[in-house]
Length: 298
Image (tube, rainbow, N blue to C red; front, side, top):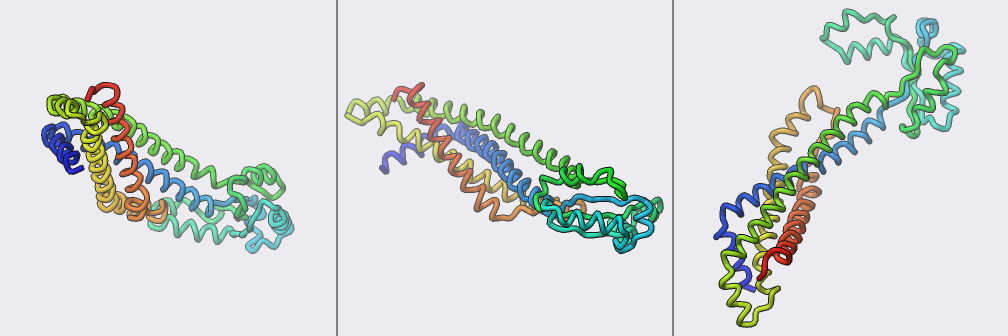
């Protein structure tokens, strides 16, 4: 066994530049894969967060909004009672015109848009929390055009563009990871072929004295696995640095704070890191085995 490991280290040292190139390419491809996995995890959490917060807004018409500060008019109480009796609805909250204007002032504090908006511009609203956020369109269809209703908006449609954008980022990351993975596979294959060629004489002698083909191939497989695992560790380290110096600062900014759930160190080291190590080792092993069986006679 000691001989096998020594031969593997000799092979890595002889083809040092190729080994370094293979490690770097593997690290880049696995890093992109890890970024994609983190993107998927973040998107899932963001969807859960937003779908738990979004509501269907039933905006009341001008006469009702102007004359009903506490939803005591027959129109508002009728709509509210019907919504609360609906099995799709988990809860209903009334927001008067004055309350809507106060919330608008808090959101856009210090911005010039406040000079353009008056309380009369905002309708009173029944905010409907859905038991299943995916079925908000049913409430929209049921209450659109009803007496006293100005319009009905499903806020889930408002965040759909955000999820579509995040999904495109995830898909682009995975696409780049696939391209880099192909490059890594070719480099692993070429490195094994080169290593086998430089040691063809000693391997031939070993075969003549009775060494099995499997025994002579193991050092080359170890070379592939070592580079794959080292590449995975470098990729994990790169993700940690990216989280600390880029992602954390980005998500702590005023624009994205409390908008996208933060990525924890456990997500990188406890979830993505082990996956990358396993994937790197498995891909390197399979590539090495196929290369030795198909292209290399040892």
